[in-house]
Amino acid sequence: MLWYHYVFGAVLIVASIIITLIVLMQEGRQSSLSGVITGGPENSYGNKAKGRTVDGKLERLTKSLIVVFFIVVLSAFLIFLFV
Image (tube, helix red, strand yellow):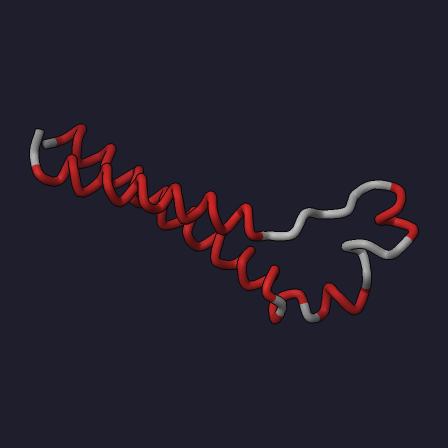
């Protein structure tokens, strides 16, 4: 195995652990009947400030890390395929 096999493997393992931890840090969504009655995620005031809350920031961070993870997996596949 070449050195970049280890580098891609280490990057993917670290990225997957970080993504897992960030997803576990996010709040769950209330989609049950009690969530609808008490004004769960459909609250109009919460949606306006969603990007500024901690959960909104974690959601954006999760999306960006998943994009980076996908790019690393795709580039590793192409490098291993053609080298």
